[in-house]
Image 1 (cartoon, helix red, strand yellow):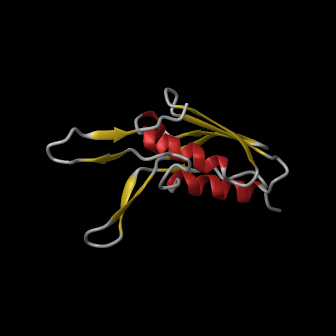
Image 2 (image 1 turned 90 degrees about the vertical axis):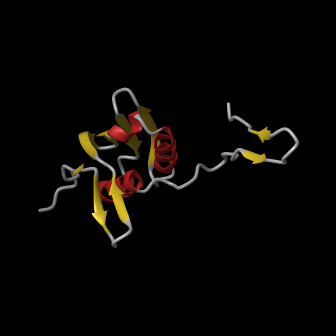
Length: 130
């Protein structure tokens, strides 16, 4: 008989050698609590890496079945509410995949652009999303 509950999972921050000059970093995370329809995860990187935190939040909201994502950097916590009718193994696999590989760029973000013309002032065009 198979269980529909996710396996206790813990990832560790470590570098895995891929070649002599390239390594892949794994993001440390731990499932702190699970109920059908909800994961509470410990992800220390959300406390000190704003770019990762924003990309993670955006990536998790795109996972099929995810209804809400809450990130608390002070607690290093990520709560993911998802449709409890979804197969937990599928949701779990996708959530954990996004933790390790969040989207590279935020969609809808306007990158800061600049031109440097020597002899002229530097012009920065930055639009903040509010």
